[in-house]
Image (cartoon, rainbow over all chains, first blue to last red; front, side, top):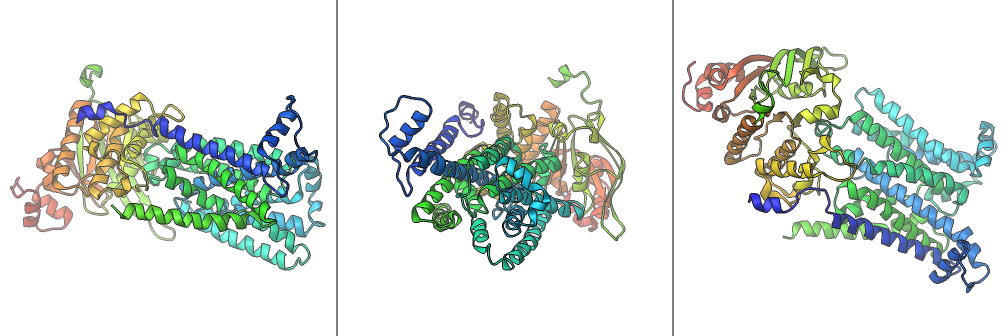
Length: 363
Length: 271
């Protein structure tokens, strides 16, 4: 028995082959989805043409085989939108994993402790009260960055709501994760009520507000991307380094502390980073649902719960899902991308759940 | 071996509680004292069985010992320093604790869970070192969990899961093990095997073990030092043969003397 143990390695985490397969596979699928999404739309730009246009932009000697409008469509319309989809999807997928581990709750998503409600309030204020808000002197700053007021206020609203939730949750003495979850729910409901009030009293801007709430990648240009992408990707990268803490938190507070996790600062860091990611993503694209809840589960079903792989693959998976869903939304013509993610993702997810349940009951 | 490296491994205690008092805060009510003036010193190589009725403060004692709960009075010393002066990670490098009701997350395989025990020693950002691999292997063998490798922890029986959790704490390679009811869910053979393993690790590696046990007969089998806790006080502390007397057990556990006699193995040890 001893010998048979010694001949095979029992640790080292996921074997190199498995890790390469999971992450490499996800990268390949991600790149493929980028390629397809850039090409397809109301005006098609073939993949060879797209590569040619990018090559020409990089100064390579390429003969022009495309229509003169193609580069503009590719660079000004298609690419920022696809990149925004990738950034937002990656952020939501990763933040979903973090919140599910942190709150030890499979129903948790990136919005659960107030980000979505707070961001909605910020955006709705910016859209419905255009006279009032510039008085807050934010106008100057946003004009300088070339970013819309709605995005700035949405970002601030997301962070602000989570800060409020954290402060209230701590008032009850020892703050535990259930308190945090319930406080997040209560504050979200309260803020959502305020948003609804604003909506009712603003007949004119209703359509644009609802469009924002359902989520859209249409408003994302390079200036917005230049601010949101480093935030999302930077904070996500920092989260990737915390896979071990995320794994240990799944064991429960006592066991995690016993294994060296300093619970309070560890959680604070995770909440802060995941909230930054979520708020930036929501500011860029509105409150796109489903991605942050379901992508972590899909990936967990495929490759298991070890955060060393789960987190990076969920980021890539979220990016793939959102890029493809947005492509479909564009092709169908003006359907909000959040509707597409739910319409296609939910049945697929149910099918996977059903299959996974079948696999564990049948011997 | 360890005696050669350390001239007197048994002289200085790894854990020392001095007159520790603790009570849980409850708003608007007077606090219930859970620990009252508990003094306890554990030296490397010792096997200590902690016995006491439900609510006598055993689990609280563990939490205070690792610094998860702050003693209200008295002091807790780990490896010669106040436990509050160590970081959580430094404590975890010295003490492994097996909680009574651990959460076992779905989907992990046995070896992945056991590897989590290496967390306090982790040096690389993403990988596991050869040292980690060896520790995990040793732990799996010591906890008799080698045959479970490759299986998902959520598909194991209660006893199999307990063996895996014990392996996880062993992989932590602590100098002191705090085990809260380690024999729960285990069948008789595995209960006896676990105690034998703990006894061997104590002798060969100088590991100190404090284990909450409930069965006096089983406890007597391992012949440990026995600490009897009642209502937050240490009421007896000594060799098993001295502490596990039916009269004392009957008083502390509020059972009749004949019952205590039967439970402690049936053979009178003197009353």
